[in-house]
Image (cartoon, rainbow, N blue to C red; front, side, top):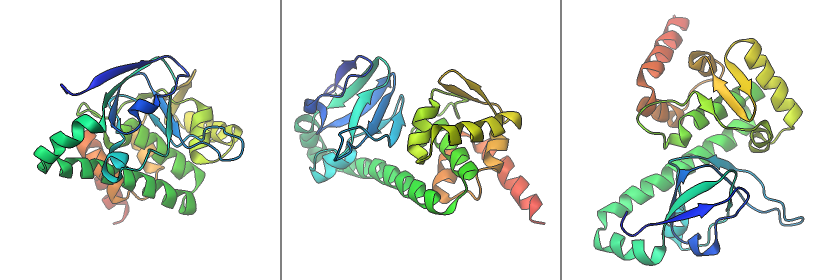
Length: 231
């Protein structure tokens, strides 16, 4: 922490190049993260990250510049530790390289899960799982548990799922009619986490691990319901 500095970003402001090679954490606000389209230069949305989401660990490990740009969606604060400061500390305390590797592995598992979901699941299942991922902040949520109010505009959700906004809106309205969630301006309120889990399809190991850390009682109830349904 003593090696870190705080970077304050206005809405729409990108994270500067001098923070591209370090380890970063969103402290306040939210960032849109994604690569730039090679032809027309628009930013593609892969992650929508909020406090306290860490990123930059892969570039720190492989020394290749980060492939995704980070742009503040709202006024935001990012904590950044440059490679020049954190790398000597990690070399002096090598056991913590393992912690960095675990962080990178967690991110990789989420990306792999999203790719597999897009190839094998229905839109309702993919949407439900994406909302669950957001509710646990992609496995980096605080121990207080799942968040029930998500600041996640439908345009962003559509981009991350690779479908139109109209398609996402229809799927969300269906879930709203079933009283699984409630739609607000640029926000989604999760009313029934049990209902969302029931619509998410079979839970893979990554999602189970995330839920076990943030909502163990909910996961246990889901497992019991699944076991009862199979008997």
